[in-house]
Length: 197
Length: 110
Image 1 (spheres, rainbow over the protein chains, first blue to last red):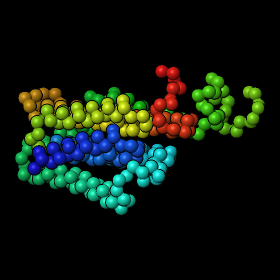
Image 2 (cartoon, helix red, strand yellow):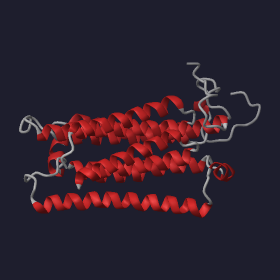
Image 3 (cartoon, chains in turn red, blue):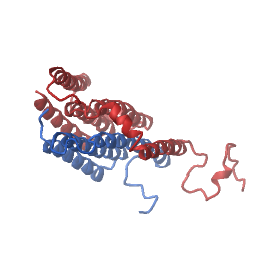
Image 4 (cartoon, chains in turn purple, yellow):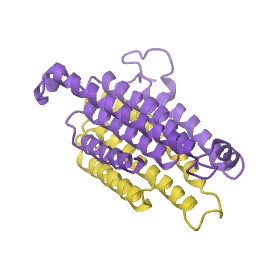
């Protein structure tokens, strides 16, 4: 049962990955990526990493996907005319396909979870079933991997600052063409036309 | 699950190859970023497969197979940071050039 489920999820992951690469529109690519993440989460569950599976769903399928979708919608990359042109199915048919595949994915991951539960209950495996036991991971993170952990927190802080700087609306039209040192003077007040600083 | 480690690694290799393909072939920045996420996921899968292999074979008992999940967590963290910076760059570039196609981007003259 678990083996068959693994091969189904693996095939699904590969098919969705092909969808990521082949999609004509970024929206479909990102949605296929979501499918790959779901399949991989199911595989992690089956392989004995329930915490990693949950992290995969929360961080990847939750946070990163939402980020991608936000950007696609902010930039208005998925225009409706192209959507109509490239899709073979009617709108309701497409909705059915999307809803059906979402339901199938959720069902597969649920099956994987149920399967892991059954394995737990049957006591088929030795006491330490989960390979990513949380207390073990936490102890390791705060002892042997202390330095990488702190580096990771620094990385996140740096990322946060970098993203704010990058995404902030620039005052000048072309941020790459501004002379060095000119940026510091463009603080908050609007730039007056023709004024030499 | 009694799937041999080879099959997990093969799946990881296929996903990574598809990610490389997308990264090299596609011109849309967002699809390129999605391909990078695919590659990072493939790496994660191979980390976990190795950890599982470690805990199941004669190596069991030596060292800690938890290194696999810990590295996977770090990979997820780096992937999140990378996605955030990459998408912020996409927004900045879109503001500059009104497009997300990689063809016209030669600001660095690389």
